[in-house]
Each structure stands twice: as C-alpha cells, then as structure tokens.
Length: 366
Ligand code: PMV
View 1 (cartoon, rainbow, N blue to C red):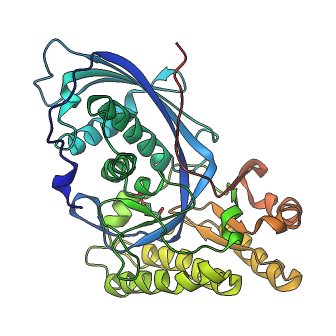
View 2 (cartoon, rainbow, N blue to C red; view 1 turned 90 degrees about the vertical axis):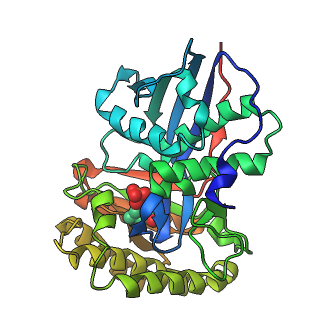
C-alpha cells in the first residue's frame, strides 16, 4: 500500500447527518518507536500490546453544510467529559489538516466531537494513542457510509493510517493483541504507514498478559514526545538505536512463539532503558524518570530474583512504570505491588490493565 491508495477514487454516496461512536484502547510498546521522518514515518519499527481498560470513547456527530468551509479552518466543536475544551482544538484542527487529502469530504460537514477517557484525568497516561485512534475510527465510520462496499480490512488499515497522522503510536491502537508498526524485513506486510496485527504464532501466555501501570508522576511532562522524537535528528546514537530496535524486534519473534520469559524480559527492559538513554543523551538532554521510577525498578529486580516471578517493567516517555507479567502470577504480583510499590506512587494510585482485543464500535442510542 502507498499513500495514494488511501485517497477515495469512486463517487461517494450522499449523506446528510448522523452520529457515530467508537471506543479505542491505549497500547504499551515492547520495542519502542522513538524518532521519526517527515509525515509521521517512524525511524524504526515497533511492537506493542494493545491494552484493554485504558480507553477513549468518542462520539462524532456530523451534519452536511450548505456549502463547504472555504477557509483553512474545519467546522467542529470539541467536548471532553461533557465540557467544551478549547485547548484540545488546535490538535484536532491539525489532525484534520493532515488527513484532509485522504478524507476530502471533511470540509463538507460540521462536526461535534464528544470524548471521554476511562482512566483518571491527568494521570500522566498519554491519551493521544486512544484518543486519536477513536477519532480516526469515527471518521472512517462516516467514510463507510459514503462508500458502503468498503472492505473491513481496508477500514482498519485506513483507520490506523489516519490515526498515525494524528499521533504515531495511535496507529497501534486499532487491532487487539500484538501490533507491529514500521517496516521490518522479517515481518510480512509490516508497513511504515499503518499498524498490522503481528502475523506469526503467539504463545498463549502473551494473550492474557497483565500490565499494571504505577502512577509515579501525574504532572505535565517537561518534554513532549514530539520534541523528543525531533531530538533524534542528529542524535549521536540514532543510527545504532534504530538498528537495535530492528534487532530486538527480530529477537522477539521466537520468544513470542515459545514463551521464553527470561528472554522476553531482557528485550523489554532493555528497550525501556534504551528509550530513556536516548533522552539522556540528546542535545539538549533531559530525564523523564523520577527517583521513584528507579526505586520501583530496583524493587522489581529484587523481587524477581528472590521470588522467581517473571515480572518486568517497561516505560513510556514519562515517569510512570508499566509492570508486565503473566496472568497466572497476578495475585502474587498485586500483593507485591500493594506491599512494596504503592508507596512510590502518587496518592498510591495504579491502574490494572491487560492485553485487549482492540477498538470497538458503539451503537448509538437515539
Ligand atoms: O506516539 P507518540 O508520538 O506520542 O510517541 C510515543 C513514543 C513512546 O510511547 C515513547 C514509544 C512507543 O512506541 O509507544
């Protein structure tokens, strides 16, 4: 597939007004995307677990305008958790600008967007992945009304393609399970343009994996991920980092099949620390981990060693710690978290999540 394949070519059916709704989950990367080229093309391939409980629900109502918007602005209002939210609008405006060439009908409508998250507000958990994928799915739902013969694979592929243009990692939040984004020579049909379901055999242990997210710091990040991606241009270790990501993804293929947790842990933790090592060696350098992030990592290492429980951590671009473990160890790990780790969380807060099945459409009640 190439960009042009996402530009509608047939004549659309006329539609007037209506409402659509989708719910999309967040995801947690095992091999990290950090660094991009123009148009949200990733500098290296990545793979993530789609989550289940951290979700955004978006409702999009549309009504056909007498004449299309002719200025650069799209006609929409945005409500977050029931209240108008002006500061989100520039993000959505620029999302619409980026996807307009693939969705030329956008200027023919006025939209009302209502969005809410299942996870606590300002928990430090990025909502861009679930938020952008839910919105992209709603846009596709409208497009499907104009092109009713659209095939479901194309629907998902284009939703992921559009979500990527909103926020890179959002393209991994459409399908469930394991999703790969970015071309990798050993992964068939992998693409820089959209996420694809991991196409090879996956051991049962990974199908019900747990992710308990420890909320270490709920504040605004000092450096946004878009600035962080930008700092990979001219980064002294960029090329070796991109190569490392390719290698780690390749190393994961047999591990995902045979369920070798020792090897899984080595790859996942190395990826998390390499991501943060890139931040610490950028120019300017920065640190997103907090002292409690390190306390937690050390506690996890001791617990794993002493109790022989295959639990590990990963990190996003922030201070929160994702604790990953097989379902069978849930009670042991939750006990450990309650006894030893909650003390390092802001207000003792954490969120229990797990691998999920991907985004789902909601029926509109009239
Ligand atoms: O999608 P963005 O631009 O917010 O970047 C996310 C990058 C990481 O979360 C750090 C890694 C990843 O692959 O999700």
